[in-house]
Image (tube, rainbow, N blue to C red; front, side, top):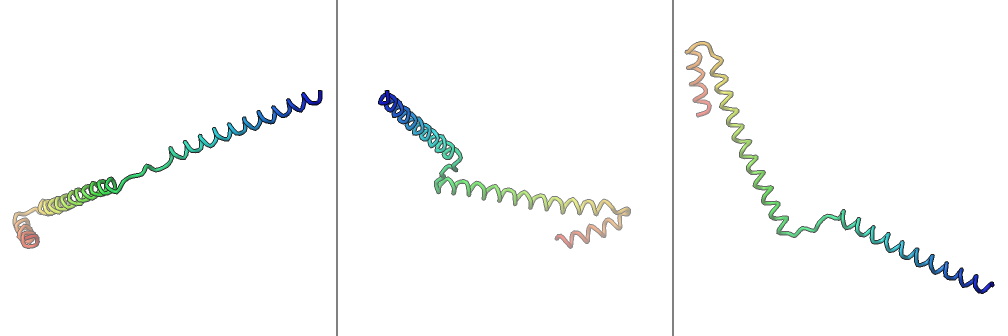
Length: 103
């Protein structure tokens, strides 16, 4: 009887080892999949250059738009200043002053 028990214990130990090994492999596979999913995709130099050019163009467009808005604001301030005068002589004087100032 003793020998049968040792044989059964030996199979239990083998089954335990195989189960633990399989569990470890599954754990490592899941870990690798999770790490690969969170990794940043590799971009080539040409992709980076293309993105840099696009961003540079967008910056230039925004700077041009800012300049246009600044000029528009200046023109609006001039019109606002002109509209605040009550008499024609004050208006004419201010128009002359602004014409010489802004040429």
